[in-house]
Length: 113
Image (cartoon, rainbow, N blue to C red):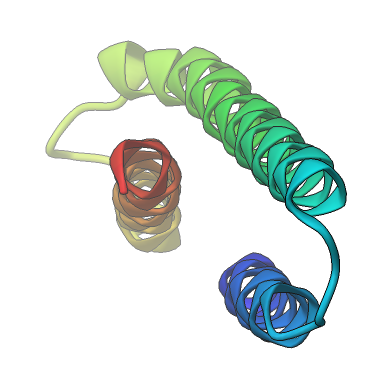
């Protein structure tokens, strides 16, 4: 959520900066240089955010892998387990995988936009 807010703030800042700078009464050569600099900065910012989102998705993948390792204990549990809380704990691990997968998927989708 904080990442999405930062992205929105960055996009708004770039848009405002571009709007202000393009209204300046400067000669053609300087305007072209300025526009080129703004475009390069915007492209770099898009790449920086994409790298951050990709790292976030990889973190989610690693988290899911660790949880899957914990879930391997499910193979040793039988329906006759006397400690019934084990089933609730395992269910929470599945919930955590789903939540991590949703966060990772959202991070990757934000790269496309």
